[in-house]
Image (cartoon, rainbow, N blue to C red; front, side, top):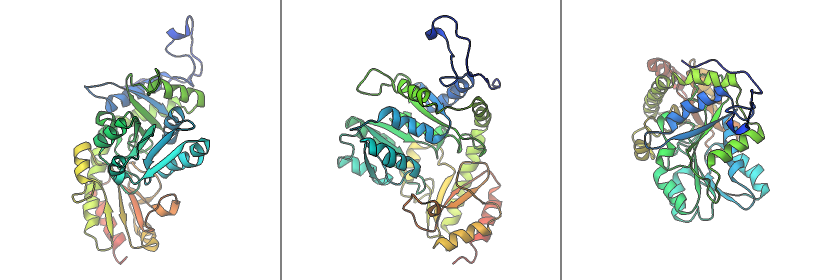
Length: 364
């Protein structure tokens, strides 16, 4: 059991400030501490300890990494087909300030690294599996290549969560996630986090990564409310159960959809025969609840959503209810007009397959 949320802005701080565990709620809160320790237990392990900072959203966590580490003259390399809002933040806000942005498809990052992509980069941003095309890159190899080039590595681990994939153990310097998704899993919170190895230095200075990002969070105010932190703790208690069911459902749906004549392609790293399957088996313990599949065109994709009775049309993922969307509807991703991103929930798989079957019937 965990204690209730602590609602306070100022804290009693007699004596030296350095001796006070809590002073002001923009810097720290006891409920955050409990949540950060819970997530750190998943991000770290017996061989090392992790430290975690929670944020008011996944993008606040992403922005904190970029803002704390990048400045004019720096270069960042990232996947061209990762989360489009993270790409837009770099290209539309950081690039005009003098940050050079290099992109390459997630599946091609290793080859591009061998060809010199990381030379001169300060930060390599990896998303694996990538969203929405579910491409996988080998974290051990890419992290090694990035470090050899003198770059730090951050991994967007949202689709897998730290329960399904541990980027820090695979060589990454930072593990970042939108915990709005499967980590909290009830589609009722906005929350994100950044995890680092305890004591890890940022490179080129004496400050640790944790200190840099914590300072950025305090100065920008990208903080999480204590009630949201408490609700996240409540939700994480069921994460293993939810994740096991959702990931099993995603794999079963991927196998089902692969056999349907209406489906042109299925993208899921846990699916035998997927281009990323061999790497995913090595570095993931769960393949995640998210998969994508391609129908022939926009009309077929929208008809699928209209016909389905259990699959809710929604833009997020990782919840207990199955959701899907036609990804091209939102823009920002160079994807087929009929590409569907589906997030498997915790419903009975027999019901989901039956519903998807009737929604596909006759689409051609």
